[in-house]
Image (cartoon, rainbow, N blue to C red):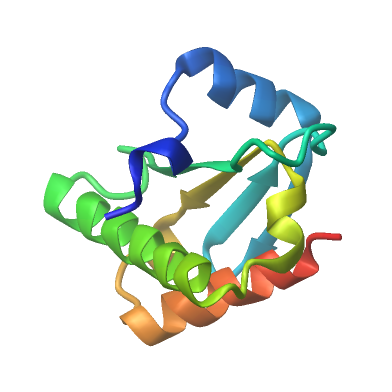
Length: 118
């Protein structure tokens, strides 16, 4: 599980990140990046969203969120996040195309999305 200081929770933080309109798409997953950091001592907050419109079963939605969260956590642990640490917040949104994918496919998509950040 992602440590508490890395989680994006408040509705205002989600809205502010969406408002920036800095997004990237890969295989059913969209990455929204918030404002660039001015103070590099703060941690980058990350949120994971799968809408009810994506799949009606909560089990499927939660599985996709868990896979995305775990792949980001492993990247954070190994230090592969790179330029993602220069943003205040990130949101990963899962869509219907990503629902049935394996962990390796989700992990490759998230790695590609994070590499696209500059």
